[in-house]
Length: 288
Image (cartoon, rainbow, N blue to C red; front, side):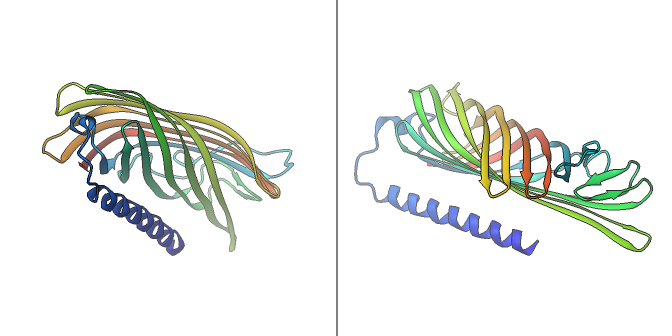
């Protein structure tokens, strides 16, 4: 846990450093502000934070390579007693460094644990937990996405952009149990870098109120290292509205859907991880 906290701190510190450098560069500009900077969608830089309340569905199967009886997939909500809904913070930033060119950053993490009595036989890795045994579990996701977008249409009312990005999915999962005094445990750690294709449309109804729809998708098959292969797909979509209540402060309400399917073969383990979280995001951003 300390390792993950330290990694998060380093990543967020790097983002703050990049943002600070960008803000400093913008502040030093001597050129007159271009016309598009006065448009409702023409903010140069925005930093946002939000409260995300997703419903969560998680299925995992991890077995020894070549196992002739892999067993059923484990539902972490149904079989391991994890909550299927929670509220987590979400952070993002975007920088329009030229009229038609933008960079986006998004960060989200979701740490969950469960504690229950097994009502099914659970097979995970090389271990099997039989019905009636106590079982503890955890499933942690850390998502970091960085993307570039080009506005193929950008005027006072509309911004239609397409772009490419990469979404890092750091997934850690594990189970624990005790059977006749013997400890049963198995852990899984997968880092999946998934490139994405993104499309985004914003429309300014008024100078203060705008709507946004976005979609990200890609499928990839890759060899990450010796005896480590990955085949995955990712869907990331959202739709909502943003209201600029003050000169530099806006509030937003967005519904977000995130769906990841990963098939993997790592050393002596093979299996898949499928998870989806979807729900509303209430956010606030500062822009200039």
